[in-house]
Length: 114
Image (cartoon, rainbow, N blue to C red):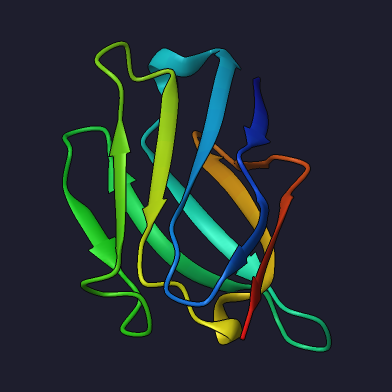
């Protein structure tokens, strides 16, 4: 099992930056890849960015060039650096880890004001 705890959300003006963190504990050596998802009010949860155990990354078109996913050397924390934030980035952001099944964090609110 894996436990995930997100932090770093908050309120920021359009054009600003935030860095989200997700601390993983438990069976982290079995993690195949980790993701950041987000869910805006009234919308479905959507994939934002993925990083594999080997360090490969993938991004949703809406955030390419603005967001960067990374991990620390111990691979027990995943980050999402968000730059040039827009009001449409407002959502609850969830960290996810995939082993045999997917695990979710509790989410952190990001609000971007215009």
